[in-house]
Length: 94
Image 1 (spheres, rainbow, N blue to C red):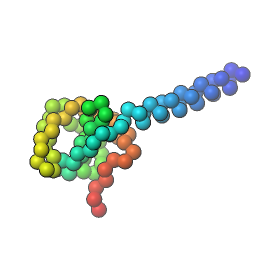
Image 2 (tube, rainbow, N blue to C red; image 1 turned 180 degrees about the horizontal axis):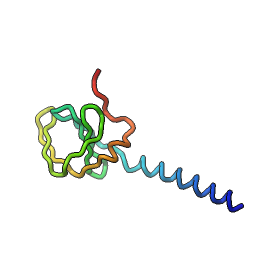
Image 3 (cartoon, rainbow, N blue to C red; image 1 turned 60 degrees about the vertical axis):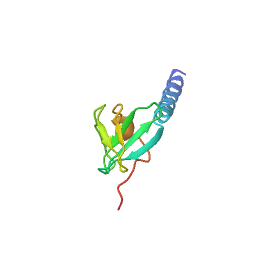
Image 4 (cartoon, rainbow, N blue to C red; image 1 turned 30 degrees about the vertical axis):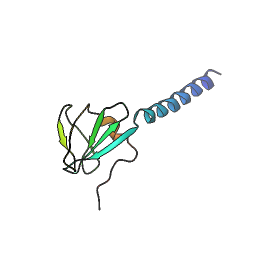
């Protein structure tokens, strides 16, 4: 009986943690930068960056970046872990 209860508890923990990861990583907007990298803006206002090959990269908060169309945006946060978990990260053009 105790084993069944333990297995049920472990299964529900795994299911809940998987649900929580997807809920926090909703991207509101993805902006392509002049150098080919992409900045993802999450629903909480934090940002994460990936290089032109789709790898999450570090960018210090407060760093000013230039978009492809010449606008300037300032990095808010550094969500490299969230960028790594994105299911549909941008891919380089063939």
